Image 1 (cartoon, rainbow, N blue to C red):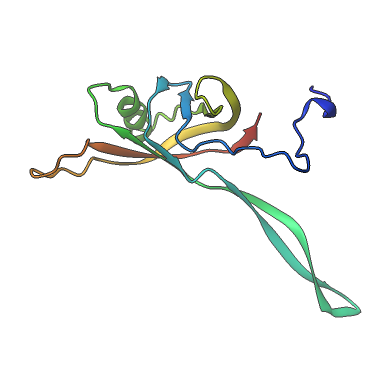
Image 2: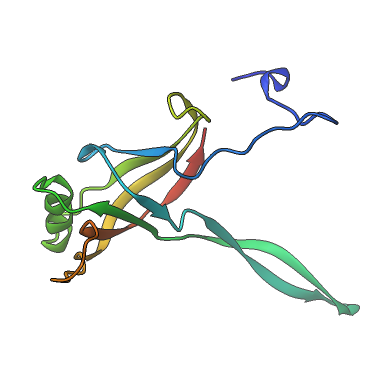
Length: 154
C-alpha cells in the first residue's frame, strides 16, 4: 500500500490541472476492452437513517444506512461487434454473467492511466438502440445500462 507521502497534495500557489472528461477508456472482463463515447452515472449514495433520542426530541441525528450504487450508462458507436450484445442477451435469457468493469481515467496526455473505478459484479440491465434518421449525418450511438454491487477506486 502506498505511503501517505506518495499521494499528491495541493500546494499553495501551485496550479493543478484537472483531468479531461474525454480521456477515458473501459475494460469489461466479460467482453474485453471496448470503445465508448460516453460513460455517465458513476456514483453511490449512503442513505441516512434519521432518528431522535429520548430526552433530546428536538435534535434529529443520523446514522449511515444502506448504500445505493447508481446505474452506469454507456454510449457507444454501433458496429458489427456482438460481444456487448451477447452479454445483454445472456442476461435477458436468465444467464447472468457478472463482470468486473473498470472505468479508467487517463492522464492529461491521454496515454497513461491516472486512476480507475472498478464496478464489482456488474451486468447489463437495459439497452437502447441507436436512433435512426434518414436525413441524419451523425454516428449511430447505442446505449447500455449496467448495475453493479459495489465500487472501488484505485
